Length: 457
Image 1 (cartoon, rainbow, N blue to C red):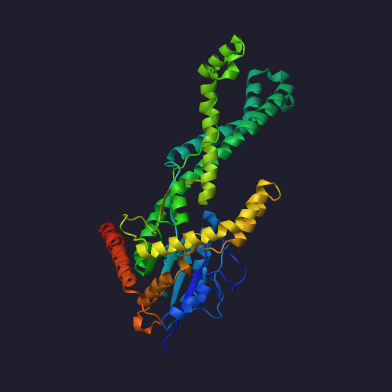
Image 2 (tube, rainbow, N blue to C red; image 1 turned 45 degrees about the vertical axis):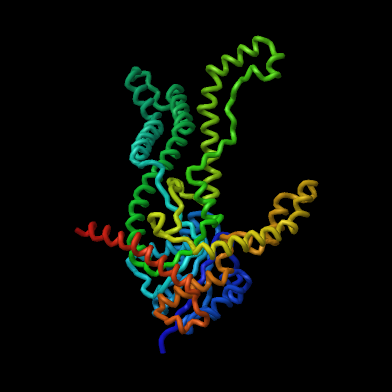
């Protein structure tokens, strides 16, 4: 008797829970869980007794990376007993899966029993280093030399003192001038150069990021070459999370307004001519420098903090370069979105659910306006009222046609005939599925074969 295949579910951001049973799509006994049990081929099962994988669900790159490394280790139990398995991952759960697949490449230990992996609305974030990193190394070395020079300043002062003074009058390091010079040098070195060394160390992280990204690109290509033919990526053009993340790339937020003196404003017309003259002089000489140095610097840093928070980017030496719907870069036609009719179903369901939600949250908005309740309490109550299908991003696994596609992919990868599936696949969905796999093969995987062949020549 052959070993049955298992389906493993990986939740996304903000979806963590200590309970393995519940109503969330990835939990035992949920509507999605039961719907999958009804649709899967006979030889593919949902795990009845095995523990489910969970991660923090925090919106940070480090949390996703840590989850991926832990997932790689967690999958070894199935590899060791030659247990075929399929992975279903939503949102950044798919990012964690991708990290696990790359980790298998880095360790040269393929996940041979990973039969298929499917992602729902996963935004694959691509990074680039903050600059080339070479200037950062030069600056950091220069700052380190300055710091060493300042730290040894008391010794330099003592040596100069002994060279310039009469040997008969030398009192050694106890001379007041030597002590004062040493204290002053230590104060200056500690106050000025220590922060410079700190920033130099931060700059070195950029160089480390450059080296990491260079190696990671090679690993990504190899991971896609090994696991790309087993992947199904389901995503909607109207997915709020993917579109929102894409919008943050290169986003510039200006909260601080430039200083200027406008004499046309009525308020200034009643001022004395001396103040008006000062304003004109400030416009010419003072405000341009303030706007250039402080306002521009402030807006740049505020924009950076806000966008990095939205992206979950806590990599100190990297910026988000792109947000893709596929694991590696590919042309627009490489990763097909879900069929238009299916997408319209998701949009209609989300719109209807959002309309039903408005009357429920209106009382809380009224209390907020009357200051009878805090913003945090309103957000908490709204989150409790939301079912999840108000957003397309959290509606994929609630749709029967999406689950049909998932089960079709699992059956194909498990070499299971469609006749063994309890429900027959819609012909239009089957046709789209063939087109998706053909598109990935022709636009991505075949190109990787060319790149790999050139690299080995």
